[in-house]
Amino acid sequence: MINNGHTLQATPQPGGANTITLDGETFTLAQFHVHTPSEHIRLYAPINPARLLPDHSRVVHYTGSLTTPPCTEGVLWNIEMEPQTISRQQLDALRFVFPHNARPIQSFNKRALIDEPAAP
Image 1 (cartoon, helix red, strand yellow):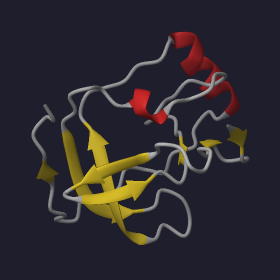
Image 2: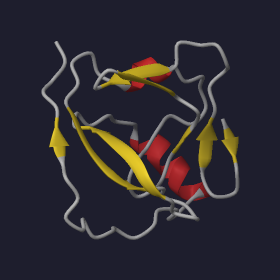
Image 3: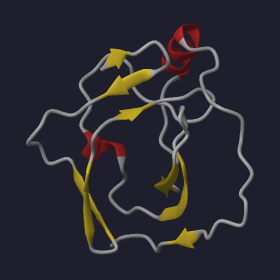
């Protein structure tokens, strides 16, 4: 995990089991990062991406844009509907380094929202 000056970013080791299959298409995790307020994650421990998702997930997805410049359109967002938690101490530590690193809420702009049932 690195501090890239804008956020905390994690890039998985190559060759790991860092994939997810959605609608029959397999995607490989390239990196993930956190925003406050918005997404939150553990700060000072190795991260297993598989542990970030619950066993039985319900996912809502839509096409949107990247959250950082150049804010490229055509990004498929997959939102896990089961909230994941961190401690108040972890959240305070993240906010100390990045008090507000999220862009303003964007208009939904008539995007199609697809609600997937929970996986068995």
